Image (cartoon, rainbow, N blue to C red; front, side, top):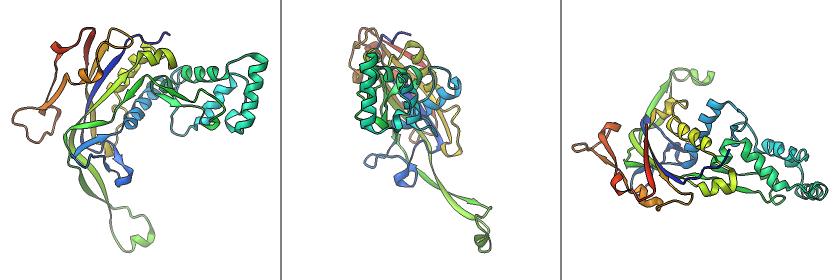
Length: 306
């Protein structure tokens, strides 16, 4: 399949109700927050994980749609698959100098560009490498030049539209952990953090130029990516995350590979504001979302999904 030929920018609006969208392990798993402003934060890797999980769920490791960064699967295992394409077995477990020698021998005897073959195999086999890129062949750093592959799709940190006020909720459990504790108490106490309500905004980018030069990210891949973004919370339910939903996906499509307008100018056209009379928002309906389409630069089209 051919790489995409158009640049895109996009805005994802999603919300959480009585849940923790992205706990901070350095703060007791409290929802991430900007301490200066009180706005909630969600990392890019948090959303990428959900997108990966969705693709894995719907494609079930179909050829070309496997996931490279995956729970329980060491990266080196996938690297070894790539090296087997050039008949170098167990490359990830070799010492760097031994692998360099093997690669030189392979180039000398067959003329194969090992770097290119390994990179292309990984990009062709794994959807998330074609999409987000990856630091590949981590075990053989210095022995190959394919190293870091820049993906055409990039996400920024999400930020809540309004400041959030995380609440610490005390919970109890009647099942006691140990026999010794059971002699002293009838219940055990715990706690969890929630955000009563928060609407978050994430901005992202799709580079047709990088798709052509590096991973081969195609129109079919792009359609699957939009699908995954829209449905990324549908198969990721958890009591800790409360009720989360993607409310709108706003896409700006450029007519050219390099784009027809600066990204920040397009993002400024998307406005999310509380409706009159709403002081403490508790639902998506408390907000008005508008896109100033009259201000769209020439060569850019706006597509609103969900």
